[in-house]
Image (cartoon, rainbow, N blue to C red; front, side, top):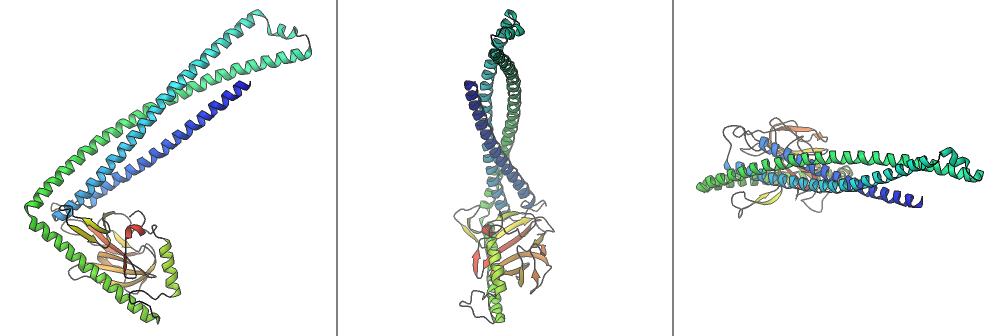
Length: 409
């Protein structure tokens, strides 16, 4: 009995370890699948939002940047799919080992059961169970014999139940193994397809590079125009922030130690603290879209030696989408860049969020706005069909990286 108890504990421990291992693999597989779906959705969004559907595809600079972004995401997708395939390989190998162990265990139990049945039959043929009891020398011996027969019967039932359980487990593992092999085949097929698409996109990029390098002056002109437009917007944003600081400090009657910082009222201090405590959790300035350009210095898609500076982020979205406030605050300025589109600046304590490239405004200077409140319709370029919001974030006059503040931007 002691041996049986120890054996049972060992088997139970092995099952717990196996279950934990399989659970860990399942969690990892689930996380990889979610990441793969996210990347697939991002590629679909890039195709829909960054590549124009109209005949005129816009300037080569936009095309090159969009293609470069799609290639990067496609490479990430291939890596994640490879990780999934490798994880499935490990799971399949684990299942194969477990099936081998279960087969050995099942055969061992079957052999033991066969011997037990044979012994039981031999004993039954030699003497009747009743005679076995009646031949007892005392009541105590008869009681012990009765207990022995009951334990023996229970043990036979337990062995039979173990055979059924092991057979069911073996069937389930074989079924899981078949399913895992099918999933692996699907992943491999998808990866082959993704690699073919990546090869096509790289060839398309090379062809576009060849076109650009044949007409460098046109590309340089497009770059310089884009830089001038960005500088013009940046200068107006910072000018309006300084004007807002001066007007706010004058209105509050408080003197700031610096002309570049808001002198905060108790209410504004509370809003600023709430805003700051939501760092990394702020909502997107659009309901749906993708980041087409990040914050900071980045290399040119055609000439890596050329560096560009982005003081905000650019979000591509669908035509007709509205810009929305990322937090409660007050409209402190309306941007109107000559030859450009409109924008809105909202003050959140001493933080300022700016939403530029709007075709239509729903708010005016002085308005109080709540989180998610619509500020205006984002402009859609009639030439290439692209709809892009330029979003900036400042604390007083200091630039902030919106990617660190807005959730998963």
